[in-house]
Image 1 (cartoon, rainbow, N blue to C red):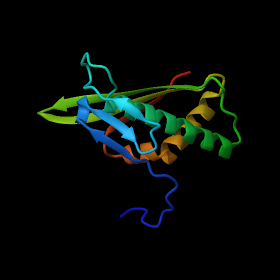
Image 2: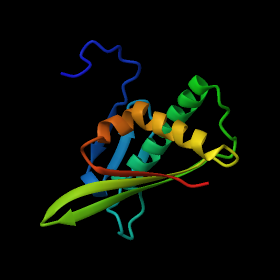
Image 3: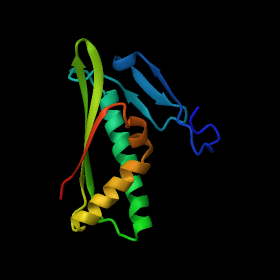
Length: 140
Protein backbone atom coordinates (compact mmCIF):
# COMPACT_ATOMS: atom_id res chain seq x y z
CA UNK A 1 0.00 0.00 0.00
CA UNK A 2 1.45 3.34 -1.04
CA UNK A 3 2.11 5.80 1.81
CA UNK A 4 1.17 3.24 4.46
CA UNK A 5 3.25 5.19 7.00
CA UNK A 6 1.73 8.53 6.07
CA UNK A 7 0.17 10.56 8.88
CA UNK A 8 -3.56 10.99 8.27
CA UNK A 9 -4.43 14.69 8.46
CA UNK A 10 -8.15 14.36 7.82
CA UNK A 11 -10.69 11.74 6.87
CA UNK A 12 -13.86 12.67 5.00
CA UNK A 13 -16.74 10.32 5.71
CA UNK A 14 -19.79 10.48 3.46
CA UNK A 15 -22.83 8.22 3.47
CA UNK A 16 -24.49 7.93 0.06
CA UNK A 17 -27.78 6.29 -0.84
CA UNK A 18 -29.46 6.01 -4.22
CA UNK A 19 -26.33 6.40 -6.36
CA UNK A 20 -26.54 9.09 -9.04
CA UNK A 21 -30.17 9.80 -8.14
CA UNK A 22 -29.78 9.78 -4.39
CA UNK A 23 -28.36 11.78 -1.53
CA UNK A 24 -24.90 12.19 0.01
CA UNK A 25 -24.35 13.40 3.57
CA UNK A 26 -21.09 13.81 5.46
CA UNK A 27 -20.73 12.49 8.99
CA UNK A 28 -20.37 16.03 10.34
CA UNK A 29 -23.44 17.28 8.41
CA UNK A 30 -21.51 20.01 6.56
CA UNK A 31 -22.20 18.32 3.24
CA UNK A 32 -25.75 17.27 2.51
CA UNK A 33 -26.53 17.16 -1.19
CA UNK A 34 -29.20 15.77 -3.44
CA UNK A 35 -27.68 13.86 -6.36
CA UNK A 36 -29.03 13.76 -9.90
CA UNK A 37 -27.73 12.19 -13.08
CA UNK A 38 -25.94 14.59 -15.43
CA UNK A 39 -28.33 16.18 -17.88
CA UNK A 40 -31.45 15.20 -15.96
CA UNK A 41 -34.11 17.73 -14.98
CA UNK A 42 -34.00 16.53 -11.37
CA UNK A 43 -32.74 18.80 -8.61
CA UNK A 44 -29.26 18.04 -7.39
CA UNK A 45 -25.62 17.90 -8.30
CA UNK A 46 -23.64 14.99 -9.73
CA UNK A 47 -20.32 13.27 -9.03
CA UNK A 48 -18.61 15.04 -11.94
CA UNK A 49 -19.51 18.47 -10.53
CA UNK A 50 -18.37 17.41 -7.07
CA UNK A 51 -15.04 16.19 -8.48
CA UNK A 52 -14.56 19.46 -10.39
CA UNK A 53 -15.28 21.51 -7.26
CA UNK A 54 -13.03 19.45 -5.01
CA UNK A 55 -10.16 19.25 -7.46
CA UNK A 56 -10.17 22.96 -8.29
CA UNK A 57 -10.25 23.93 -4.59
CA UNK A 58 -7.39 21.54 -3.80
CA UNK A 59 -5.42 22.69 -6.86
CA UNK A 60 -5.74 26.34 -5.80
CA UNK A 61 -4.36 25.39 -2.39
CA UNK A 62 -1.46 23.59 -4.07
CA UNK A 63 -0.78 26.72 -6.16
CA UNK A 64 -0.65 28.75 -2.95
CA UNK A 65 1.89 26.35 -1.49
CA UNK A 66 3.97 26.39 -4.68
CA UNK A 67 3.88 30.19 -4.89
CA UNK A 68 4.97 30.55 -1.24
CA UNK A 69 7.88 28.17 -1.85
CA UNK A 70 8.88 30.27 -4.88
CA UNK A 71 8.45 33.55 -3.02
CA UNK A 72 5.78 34.68 -5.48
CA UNK A 73 2.51 36.31 -4.41
CA UNK A 74 -0.56 34.87 -6.11
CA UNK A 75 -2.93 37.44 -7.60
CA UNK A 76 -6.04 37.93 -5.44
CA UNK A 77 -8.26 37.58 -8.51
CA UNK A 78 -6.96 34.19 -9.64
CA UNK A 79 -9.65 31.90 -10.98
CA UNK A 80 -10.06 28.32 -12.07
CA UNK A 81 -12.62 26.83 -14.40
CA UNK A 82 -12.58 23.07 -14.13
CA UNK A 83 -14.35 20.79 -16.58
CA UNK A 84 -14.91 17.11 -15.84
CA UNK A 85 -16.34 15.16 -18.76
CA UNK A 86 -18.24 11.90 -18.39
CA UNK A 87 -17.38 9.93 -21.52
CA UNK A 88 -18.42 6.64 -23.09
CA UNK A 89 -16.65 4.62 -25.80
CA UNK A 90 -17.36 1.01 -26.70
CA UNK A 91 -19.82 0.85 -23.79
CA UNK A 92 -17.04 1.75 -21.32
CA UNK A 93 -17.41 4.86 -19.16
CA UNK A 94 -14.54 7.14 -18.27
CA UNK A 95 -13.85 10.70 -17.22
CA UNK A 96 -11.44 13.32 -18.46
CA UNK A 97 -10.65 16.76 -17.09
CA UNK A 98 -9.52 20.20 -18.12
CA UNK A 99 -8.34 22.77 -15.61
CA UNK A 100 -8.21 26.32 -16.93
CA UNK A 101 -6.17 28.48 -14.57
CA UNK A 102 -6.05 32.28 -14.70
CA UNK A 103 -3.31 34.11 -12.80
CA UNK A 104 -3.80 37.69 -14.04
CA UNK A 105 -0.85 40.02 -13.71
CA UNK A 106 1.64 37.23 -13.03
CA UNK A 107 4.48 36.80 -15.51
CA UNK A 108 3.49 33.91 -17.80
CA UNK A 109 6.68 31.91 -17.21
CA UNK A 110 6.34 32.24 -13.43
CA UNK A 111 2.63 31.46 -13.61
CA UNK A 112 3.37 28.30 -15.60
CA UNK A 113 5.97 27.26 -13.01
CA UNK A 114 3.40 27.70 -10.23
CA UNK A 115 0.80 25.67 -12.14
CA UNK A 116 3.30 22.91 -12.96
CA UNK A 117 4.47 22.68 -9.33
CA UNK A 118 0.85 22.60 -8.12
CA UNK A 119 0.03 19.76 -10.50
CA UNK A 120 2.94 17.78 -9.02
CA UNK A 121 1.82 18.30 -5.40
CA UNK A 122 -2.00 18.46 -5.53
CA UNK A 123 -3.39 15.19 -4.09
CA UNK A 124 -6.22 15.17 -6.65
CA UNK A 125 -3.74 15.60 -9.52
CA UNK A 126 -1.62 12.79 -8.11
CA UNK A 127 -4.67 10.52 -7.86
CA UNK A 128 -5.66 11.22 -11.46
CA UNK A 129 -2.15 10.94 -12.94
CA UNK A 130 -2.06 8.09 -15.40
CA UNK A 131 -5.70 7.23 -14.72
CA UNK A 132 -7.57 9.84 -16.76
CA UNK A 133 -6.83 12.31 -19.53
CA UNK A 134 -5.94 15.63 -17.85
CA UNK A 135 -5.21 18.93 -19.55
CA UNK A 136 -4.17 22.03 -17.65
CA UNK A 137 -4.29 25.34 -19.50
CA UNK A 138 -2.82 28.57 -18.25
CA UNK A 139 -5.22 31.23 -19.49
CA UNK A 140 -4.27 34.81 -18.72
